[in-house]
Every structure is written in structure tokens, then in C-alpha cells.
Image 1 (cartoon, rainbow, N blue to C red):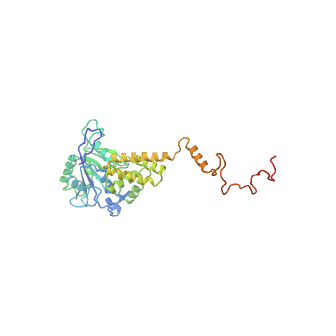
Image 2: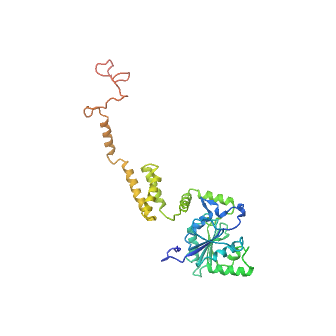
Image 3: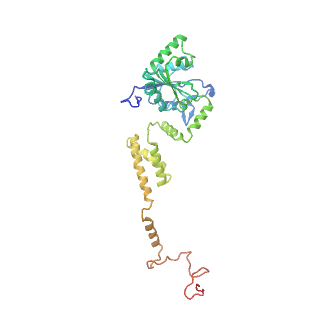
Length: 350
């Protein structure tokens, strides 16, 4: 079990659970399987699951499918009963005091946003003047609209209000989320990027375009590769890029990918982990610099090379200081541009 690490806390804070709502008809996408739509090479659902990877238990309310990490599955009753019915079904399979509630169509949600929500819920960022911590913290979009499916809640108030609504309406089927959030004491955080959800194909296109922008594409690619390979390893990306640059410039361009591959291979043999990668990268980087230094003449090295070249061009048997032996294009003493020698008919210089 991985506990959420509270910044500044002396040890692991209380773990949290996550409920991800991945059902719905996706009518604005023409009935497409929205959680399975790929953005940056990864299904939307997997992107959300990566953001809440630190949860002790993650429950996905949907038909089971292959996911990037193990989860529990739940179904609302009756099927298609709407978001409150789905939330209730997921919440019944959790046990933590705090629960993160997410939709499955958030391409830009990340672990940092989840930490911010939990920090605010647990009081470190709420700014409530010492008042009791809120019952929930949710994101708002650029227009100020609440996003109750990008939120962290205390589980007990959620269960309480869901029970009240179910008793008042004979069930939760078809009830909108605002019936729940209106009854809770909430704190709001504005985040126009993390709150972006994909309801239409235009939204999908916008998300795909954004992750390919220069400032995002590398992080997106690294995250996609780690998910694809099933590894969870945070390393110094900048250090590896510096190593690749040094190998490319100091040795040869193909040395860059091969060197970084060998660093990973060596780190795996050393037991893996960020420390092993860093140690292997340092050794390879130092070697690349030594290699490049050998191609940079030291003081006097150019003179030495020139002297060696001169001796290679001296005519065999000639005295030191004699000129070079005639080559195929050297003057031979005849021809229109040949130098005048003793006894020649050429006129002397004036």
C-alpha cells in the first residue's frame, strides 16, 4: 500500500482512495468509447489512473477493461443510473477517510493536481482561518464553473449526503451532481488546465494538439513510455539529455541513443532505481567528456602535429630543412611557369 506523502509531514499521511467514473453514453462523441480514446498515445482512462496512482484503493465505475494498473471495478444499479448512482457504487468499495473523485476524460490531470486537492482538503492550503477543514475541495474551470468530478472529498460527508438524497428521492438514479455539492461545505481551486475535460471531438483534437507543443511533448512522451513499459521510475531527465548531447557531439550522433540505452541496462543490472540510473549516467557522461577532450588539441599540440606532417613530406635522404620532394603537381623545371635556373635564357630581374 502506498500512502500519500503530505508535504512537510514527519511521515506518511493518511492514505486516500480514488473513485473514477468511466461510464456514460458519450453522446457528444457519437457514442464512442470515451475512456478508451487515446490522447498522446494513452487512453484517457489510463491518464487519469496515472494521476491517482498513489491511492490505496482505486475503484473504476465501468465495465472492466485492460488498464495501466490494477483497479477494482464497480457498477451502478441500475446501469446508466447517472453520476450520483455511479459515485455511490464506487464509494461503497472504499474505506479511506478521504477520497478523490475523478471523471475518466481529464487529459491534463496529474499527480501534482491530486496532491493540491488533498492538501487543501487536509487544511494545508485551505486558508480557512483555523476553521474545521472543508468537506470537499474541487476544481473550477476558466468560467468559474464547478468541476465536482475533479475533486477530493471527506468520505463521511459524501456518504451522509448520498443517503439523504436517496431517501428523499427514492434512489439516486438520474439525479444531477449539483444536488450533492450544494449540500456540502466546499473549497474551490481554479485550474483551467487540469479541469479541461473531453466532451467532444474538438476537445480531443485540442488536447492532442496541446501535448505536442514544445513545452509539453517531452514530459508527455516520457510518461507514455513509462506506462507502456510498465515502469514507475522518476529520473533526472535533464541529466540524461545532457549525457545524450555530450555523446552525440563528442563521439558521434548515433552514440546518443545507444549510450542512454546502455545506461538503462547498466542501471537495471545494478538493481534499478533513480540512484542506479544517476550513477551510470555520471560514469557515461564523464567518459564522453574524456573522449571529446582527446579530440581537442592541448597547448603546443598543433605545433607537434605540424612538425610530424613536415617530416612526412621530406624527400628521403634529404638534409634537414630541404624542401619537399616533387609531387605530381610540383614544378619540374620546364614549362611556361617553370622557375629560371642558372644558364637559362630567361631575362634577369630588373
